Image (cartoon, rainbow, N blue to C red; front, side):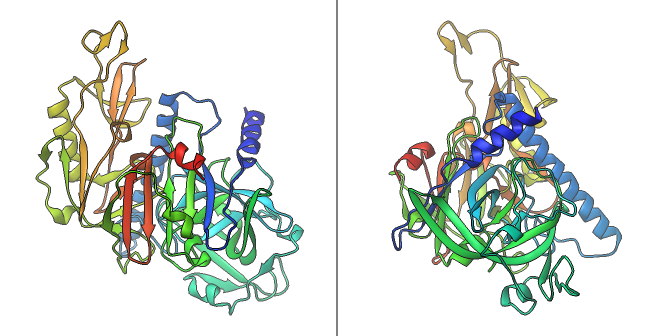
Length: 450
């Protein structure tokens, strides 16, 4: 199994993460889903995603309880400390670092800022299926000094001294996330390569060379690429005013797409809707949205708008989570409108609300399966109504005759729109105008159009 995983990782990292090299064209790179290439069945893919999501929420809840017990203020939402959101490691961007270039696979995370990857020597790291990035083998690697502006801007840094493993007066960082995951290492600069010989773009960027990394990580990733609002994020360092992504279905092996700069102006041909991107000084890295309400079918739920005030869109989170009372309202309306027997949490899938699919007509015909009627799910944003495609909130396991709602509740006040709900949607972040635009798209065709 381990050999198979390593072989799969080598194939994924060999994918041509391409880049537009013409001046002003911006950068475009390929993404793969974290479980791509493992040959897993659809129910197993959902189980893995749900278990990762819940494991992180348990760690976050434990963290909050610890802080509360120590009479420390508990921050609502996902942001915590110097880091950002809970990252569920779903979509990986492939690029190379150093001279000569060495491949890395970083989780695309709009909920945090730092770009980092594991580095040798590794003091305490999670397993990864490709060799660690070794700064000693890169002729363009340079550790940042303690007085560098980007070092001083990080909340938790110190000076390496004494000529030890950290280097004389080099910037040593600590960056942690809401689920207690953290990375500790040396802040450095090196050459980042987006693409291959057919279309290469190179930039010198600051990143974290992590020597101590703990958390719920997977063996097919090497670190995280922060796409948040902070100055250490990839969009900020590249100086772009826009970026976009288009996630293919997690059930397909087709590549997804992320674009930065002028390349983000690509359009899928569909009509885009737009809604303002908001800021919250208490969580400055995150992208907030004004969520006004939620409808199940034609019924708008009687949820006070104030309960939806803290809403973020997050590429690094998998399943959309709602405050517990809001989730219960959504759940109750689905139960009322679907009209099928509720079987509670489907044990294997780790999803909360599931229905038993009937084995007789009219749901099963001679010509194959017929889709069970389910109500639509619409997020009413400021200036836009985001009606989710059926496959972005309903999962059907016809073998087990089970249909589940792919949403969940989370403690706290924050609503998080995760990447499962963003599949096959072209999402564009206009950082200059603080505007989020989105439209349905066939993301694999968008990749092929470049």
